[in-house]
Length: 181
Ligand SMILES: [Zn+2]
Image 1 (tube, rainbow, N blue to C red):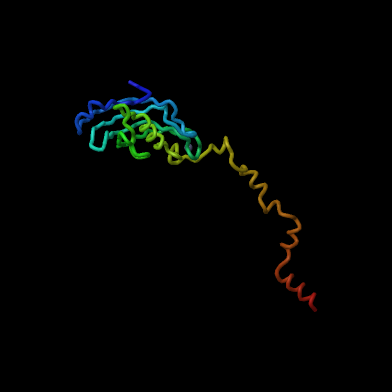
Image 2: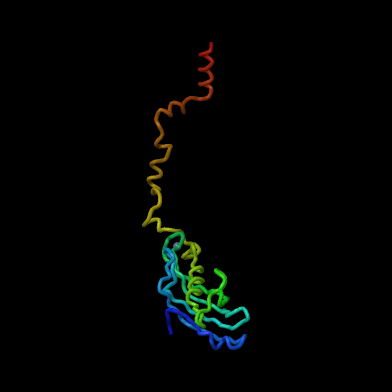
């Protein structure tokens, strides 16, 4: 069964420390785009154990999904399955950025798995190890080779330099000598 949120009731769990409950769910998150990266279909497979511990409610297990991001060389979309191990703590008085809140005897796993999954999106994937980048025939990035040759410094050289090329070192030395005498 797919669902948009994952909220777990912890009333039963809290009756006795050490009580565990397994939670398996397919979550479909609404908006998972981070720039040009996203989770394919917003779809995450959650498999966790929720346990009443002395420090609060401990949730541990895995989150699986498929990330989508552009190849850093050719910019084609790259889809890659990922699996994240998680271990998070829920408390009545959570510490900002460290633990999550218990509210109305329930814990909401949605923002937790969302944050972890978005952090798992690759920054600069490669579509394949030997991706050569953009198709150079369709998207040339520089002058074509023929043009390169025509523009080469040798061929475009100012003709006046040819006269200097003809001079040898000795000619120049003699000229200087003559001027001084
Ligand atoms: Zn590529």
